[in-house]
Amino acid sequence: MSGIAFVTGATAGFGQAITRRLIHEGWRVIASGRRTERLEALREELGNNLLPLTLDMTDAAALKALPSSLPEGWKDVDVLINNAGLALGLDPAQDAEYSDWETMIATNVSGLSTITRALLPGMVARNKGYVLSVGSTAGAYAYKGANVYGATKAFVAQFMNNLRCDLLGTRVRVTNIAPGLCGGSEFSNVRLGDATKAAAVYEGTQPLTPEDIAETVSWLLQLPAHVNVNYIEMMPVCQAPAGLAVKRDI
Image 1 (tube, helix red, strand yellow):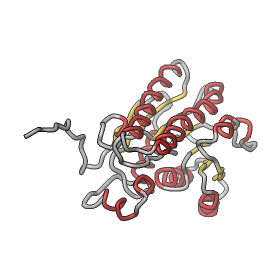
Image 2: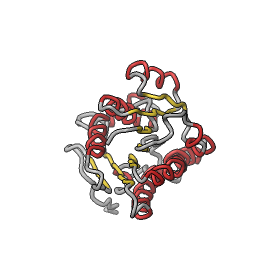
Image 3: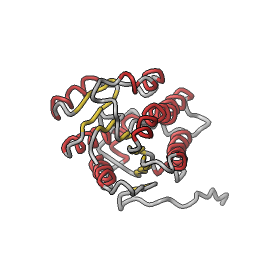
Image 4: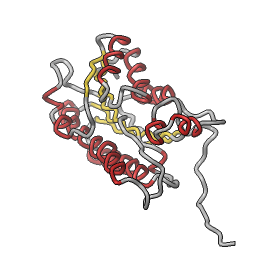
């Protein structure tokens, strides 16, 4: 499979690694993000098969307009890679900032669902396409401080499941990729707002890397067109699901 891939959150981390991998494999890539200078640097690096697109995932009007606003020759998106997303804070729910919750929901839930709704009709009309979303193990396993972030990733998982049902009878495929501990991105820096605290998250570990996620995306896109992988959960060998927490009054 090859053609046009749309990668959200392409200015760093998973999105940047996926963009590089797909360009090197012969794809044309619409690389979106908020930081125009980073997108332009990617085009300088990767060439004219990359179309930089400054896009805020909380701008619903811009997302809805994509089918008509993309340049000629770039409108028929074959693959949508919903990568843009973020976590903010690790405070317990009773202490968390409402604004952080609102930002995570606006990006991870509303933005992802809006862009999918915008581009999906074209895939269905052409009877080919692929929607890959980057979820998280936080959508399956609860941990302290994950509250709304984990809930947004649970939404991604169930949204992808329901898309698969709605698309039965078409040749449009749907996959949720759920990584666990992953370094080499800005995820923990954004979440914690402190480079030292972010580095401590990965201290003494060998986490997944953005290139591991790009490798997985590449493999999925090379599968035969009749194969749909519903869900991939990925963890480094240094990680496993935690047991249930118990508070003992002793």
